[in-house]
Image (cartoon, rainbow, N blue to C red; front, side):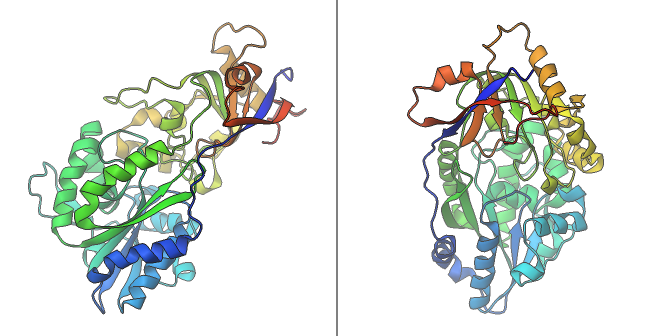
Length: 413
């Protein structure tokens, strides 16, 4: 099988990263200054996604609140993540470098909720009890195409205000309705959340194809509904992508919650596996192999069901309690199903390639990536290279790289 050799290429995306994050956040926060009342206790709500520059952004928000003579503290706003426990969610924040020691303000975590006025919402509307008892809440989140559905509001401040701040009970109530809950009930419930006046505003972050911050916007709560779709379009237009749409085997070195909300970003691989959500028409990938699970996932392997073959190394890292809690809460069970488990990298690849049917030797369309978040440097087979070699945005780095080493493991990325 060492007959397989790939070419390492570099994809050049538009690099529009912000040079000075602290200065940009500081300027944007001035928009929220009128809402910070002296001596108020302000909750800073943080989610469970691996957001670039999250620590400096949180520090700037905490500093801003203090400079306006108010008292900031941190609350997790991550629905059912972290095993749907206060300790688990605090642990997720700590894993991102967010704790009382690093930020200098308390972290207050609880799964208790209070019920808000339901209004026109067909389901109860809930909010984290600690956040509700504060004098105001500032949300911090990334605006990004969602991994489960596509609608006017996807990953961002609107969703976070409902599922994030509503803890496990609100997340379960929304997800019980499947795609309808995500696309329709979230905006409906958000209106009721905003009517409480508890949400003072939010910091919206947009990242580019290099997983770096390209845009920071401080939004007043009244602007969430109007501005978030605009930011979502910007985020979608700046996502990375695979260089080809017809692929036999895609090898993914690692998956994880710090990579994507479902471990493997469906927007990249063209697989959703959700009843009621139309499958993307590209890219078309016959077989997907995943080699490992990131340590920062803490065993949560949600999304493993999007692949076809995994290694025993990955399988042994799965915390089924955490993974199943996430899957059952979302109601998208397919994403937690275990694929074929292979003993070695070579065995995993051979199984995936065999599942593609008959392929002419040397014409296999193979791509290998580090993960679905980092697509600037990837490996491609000769047949893929022949399709993309005329692209001005793609340059070969290293040719004729063997796919495996002598131990039947993938060559170091």
